[in-house]
Length: 316
Image (cartoon, rainbow, N blue to C red; front, side, top):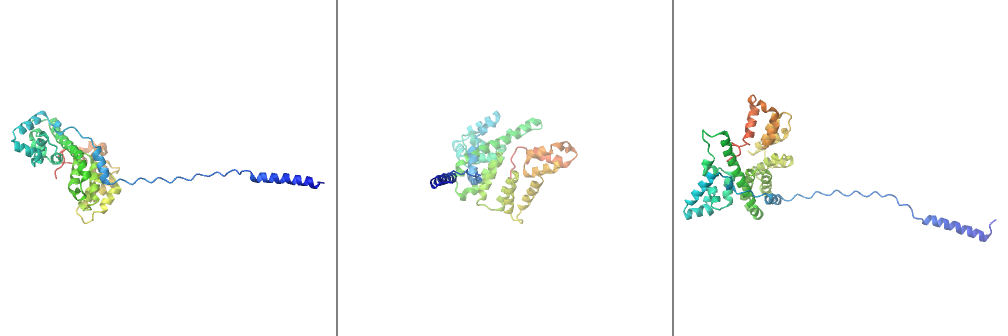
């Protein structure tokens, strides 16, 4: 039988044991880390800012006149030497720069109106017709070379115009955009830079909601196969507007651009302005061109790259 002292010692031992067990650190429960919230995509920059980025990144090509053959260079040199001082001044700094843009460049000029005229009008063909004309004795290669020269002159002048337009686009007041940005758009098309053309239109569309502009923007979005952008432009053009019919054709082309029938697919891509893609789509049926007018006509449009003359910007 326990005496009082022994009982107290036993009780103290038990109490210490219980306290020790109660004070021991508990094993922490596993905690699942909270999932990090998905980072929001940054808001797109304004179209004018993106346009300026593309213009600044465009490489300046070699001089336009480097494309001309020796005979054409000599003709320009002789014409320049024959000018009186006041005439030369008009060519270099006056209104004649736009009328004779090649002579303007030969005189050392680089005015934007002259470059734009070379890029978007037949000014070069009118100024130096002998460099582009063919005769009954000309070979197919001669004709192809003349057409290529016209194309390359327009494209190179357009690239110079775009590169020179950076400061103008950056500093132009909003009320003056309506005269500058359409020129940028036309030059971009001549330079084969549809990305720049579209951003010029998007910049204009911030303030210009006209059906005509929205139709051009819709066509640019259709070319990029950007259906969301196209639908936005389509919604801005009333069904009663004359331009709506063009957008309706583009909408149908967007629907059939992946059609299993290569002819349907090819014509849809042609309607969108994607000539190289249309050529690839029509490759399986190219042999049918002699028997199928649809194939022959499509191949003719592809060869002309959508213009009346291969490689030459349409004048309209």
